[in-house]
Length: 287
Image (tube, rainbow, N blue to C red; front, side, top):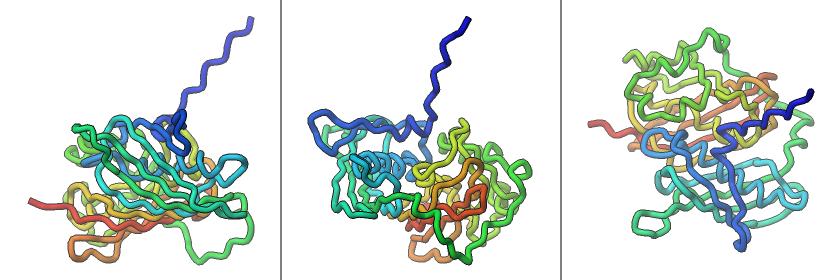
């Protein structure tokens, strides 16, 4: 006797980045911001980037077009809140190898007025072209294997209460970079670790847009605890990742005038550099 196969459960990431084309409105998509991706004062910026990236994939990838993000630049205008959202996309240019699109993520305020959360300009193409010649001096970061690293469940309790996001991730931080959790930040401005989704979903180009903003902010390693809001983030997706863990490094070299840059590199299990990003963020307020 045969039995019906169990339905495949969608990943929490896939549900969190799902978009639906709005009937009767070309290039407009509806979405739901899930509070389970909250960190600090709003929904994680990497999740918002992946959500808008998914809408642009649907828009630019139609009719055999370009479905892979290559470069995505986002300006964060206000904090995303749990609840319905609208994504308005625009095709700026369709080329032979690269297409360019824009998008805005909006929500409705309590008074019924639209509030823009995020504005994006992005280039999409086909990452299969990235499987050719690779010439790089970049090397993966050295760190202990995942089972010898520190799970984020050991982070300070005050941080965990503001980071629902961490329940969706399996994040193992390099022990050399977690002195801040013990009140002993190194002052170097570097945090690195292993990353995968907690439900086992394998990484893909869209998930890399989350990965570049998934680690605790490097301000923690500078002794500055608190929410570090992103003003602008540009991510470059360099290749499709192979299945398995991602190695992620966040670092900064310059904090001045209340702002800092945060650079990220993401490496896959094969040792390939699959994504890079730089963001400008505001220094956490103290007192």
